Image (cartoon, rainbow, N blue to C red):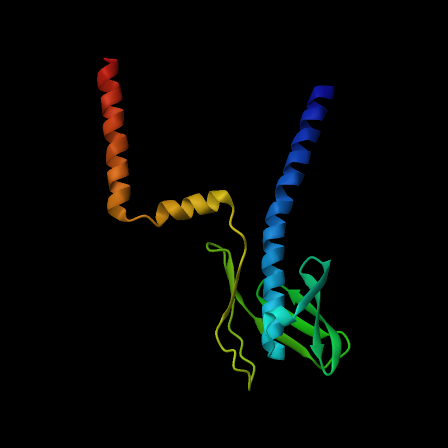
Amino acid sequence: MRPITQLILSLAVLVCLAFPARADEIQDMEICLGRQTLGRLLCKPADEINYVSRMRDGLYLFSAFYANRETHFFVGVDRSVIRIQGKEFKTVTRTIPYHFDATSKCAVVDYKTPGCPMTGPIVCCAVKTEEDRQEERFWNRPIPELLEEDLRRALQGVNATDNGQ
């Protein structure tokens, strides 16, 4: 029984170590969303919004110079909405919808603040894994190149079977 227990524990440790990387990718995207959306709400460039800390999964604390002083804001990123609330100014509360595209691993927010010159959509993407990048490189090639590669592989397979006989 002891080797089986060690095997199970080893697999459990490997699984636990594999998942934080995925969570970090999404967390980085959520921080980007929080910073960009709060910047749009306050009509400030994103580099003037400071990330302070992660309160828990999907809830972050940011600070910015607002109302003549340094002010903190809670930003919650849920599955389809971003909730922003001022820590000191409870009246600064917004719920903003966004769309997450799972294939591109990007979130898009269409939000405009009246009187603010920044109007384009906010796009934040999770960092892609090497496997995602390889798949993207494969599918971004032109179709004739893909067909030539398939033909080359097929001919190599035919030549290998002819040489073996």
